[in-house]
Length: 177
Image (cartoon, rainbow, N blue to C red; front, side, top):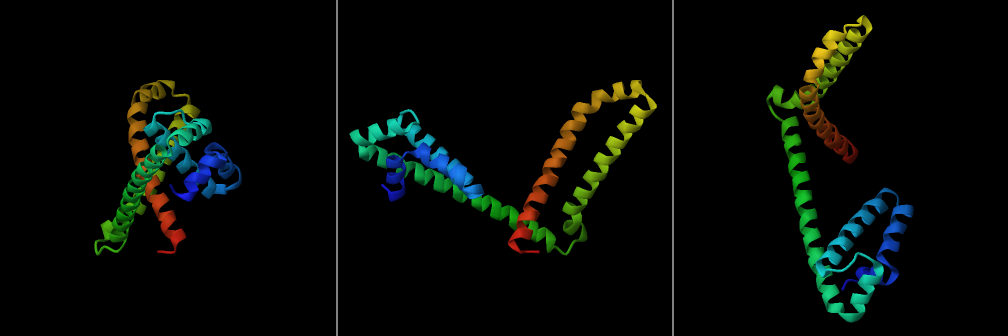
């Protein structure tokens, strides 16, 4: 068993995650979330309640079972983290290739998509504001049929723009331009 796992069991896993959440800032929040996930998976593997007492009782009875469950969950979480890291790196590489492409359209489609999304939302909002100001209730009622479609299209579009902005912000923070 790793020293951290032994300390977490002895100190109390929930107390440790609570301390990380209260005093650890953003990094503590992330560490607490990972710890909660790990504790949930370990106790699920062992078939016990996810409480300090249940873990401690099983540790007293069969430390090798707890140790094996910890190693198994550690390996699974490591594989998940590696897959997430590779996916993020792959997306970053894709954006970098787009940005460095010889094709103008390939270079500008993501920023252009963001601008077009903003203009589309603005045009839609202004159209409905105009209809409300003029009191054209019939047109608004007829347009309500399209709300489901517009919500799906704009929601999907917002997701694409949001991911681009999020990853671009990460790139800027990392210092790559």
